[in-house]
Length: 370
Ligand SMILES: [Zn+2]
Image (cartoon, rainbow, N blue to C red; front, side, top):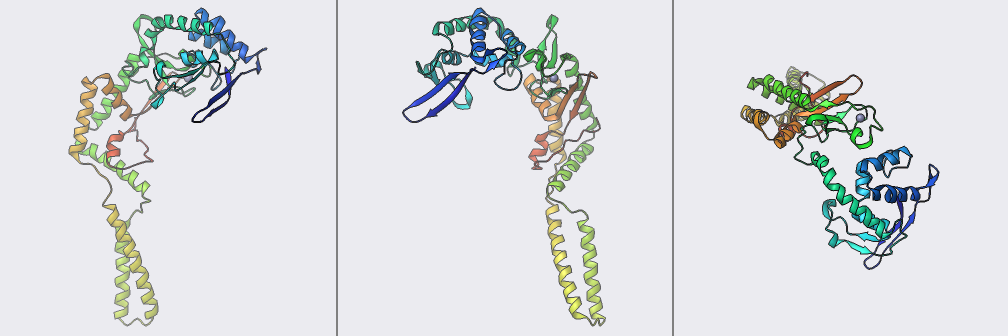
């Protein structure tokens, strides 16, 4: 909205120059559009969605990316931004981990730069915003950690635009998942929203997980499956050479052949000695490989079963937070194909199992043929 031309921090002097962005978009300089949004729309009670739609409709460039979203407007109308539009310089707004500091900790300097709106206008917007908060608060609760949506937060994505599928209440309190582009930017950058019933998809995902566990009902089978996966990963990451044992036997056979030939009166002793040295070297190399091979990480039955029992319990009677942790571990990705209305669910061996074995990176999750 306003370009920050220069900001320099020294121990004593804090200087920042803001100038209005006067590039012309859709027939008006950007700072005029900004004033219009703030004074005509926001101060008169326009919602974040209305501000977003206004900007997208008029082709005003968004701060990041092509399209405006309501969240962009949410942060642009934060009190510290409003102060800055009114000409104040504001520092120390956020502290560690980008958390907002209390306003009493902010460093505020009057007349720091050219003002886009007056102080009264800024206060007016702030007053309208805090009145609206009671209305909009109800819709933002599903963003919190206590979200009733098990698949929100990035496991479930839109196959058309790659955005996360997010929780969305429609009529009669029924929950749905829909591409984030729909509530956030009216589908811009994606397309017509497809609403996936929350109850249906979650039931399907948990049932699939139970199927997966049922397939692991045979303890030895389950351990074998995990261990062969661990071995595969380990071999990949260690540039493993197969057949070490077989090749060792072969080298030993050649060595004894040459020794026998020497005893039988072989005359070319120079060749024989050279060959013996080469073979001894190869034997040494293979022996060291064989020693390393004994370090392939493997789990035992007890460990695998304890983990499985834990998973079954969480599916049956865990809290939402527990279920979410579980799904994050067992699900590689769930993807909606909006055109065919198909949802693909890909499971994986949970990382806690693999990680605790030290198998490390480059792990490609198996799908168990699902
Ligand atoms: Zn999408």
